Image (tube, rainbow, N blue to C red; front, side):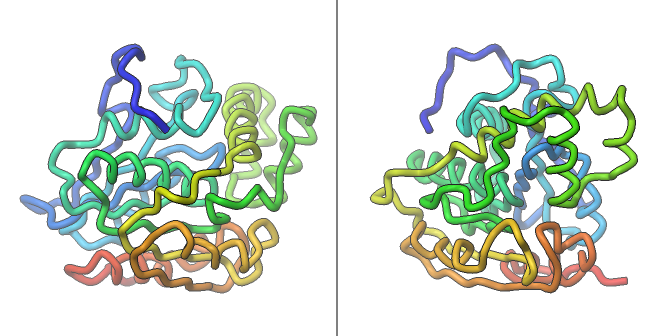
Length: 262
């Protein structure tokens, strides 16, 4: 991914949500990149689980939220580049986390920051194949009718069925989901020489039918730094059933104050 400066001006607050923990400052920042079809709202609730000294940053993709009127993304760069351009300047101690397709966006942002001499401290890849592998579970969204696409979304989980059952809402959200799935299907990093230098933690659901365990394990090929892989019970959106266990793993890597508990 290359950084381009010929795009229309962006509103930083629309592209990267900054959710402070209520303290006067922050020790670290956690940048979260949503899954295919996801938006920043899906992850804002993590603020309640993270410690107060972690600033939560959440990327918002084109075609949703305040960016609804923007052209839909065509490739991984059009998802990653605006987030990179809109990162707050005071993100020296940065951990990047992506879920599913968001992990590939996170990888591209981490590579760009490394080139700029501002590498992240760590990358957390959740429920996603290594960027060097083809998609093991392609959706082929461009070939599906709206009904078939909805069925594919529901099979993966993570989306409120009530939303998908409303025809008016479906017409609004399906184009962005279709675009994201197409990007996820097509993406594969063919240059394995430009490795990251940060720590990578890969987390997956033990019963995830979308991302086989071996695809998750191969994130070790993306960095010269230390790597670890953890599995939690559940499927592709395993963290929805056990958010505290998931955030505890994230907070352990970030360090600082412990995660909040019920």
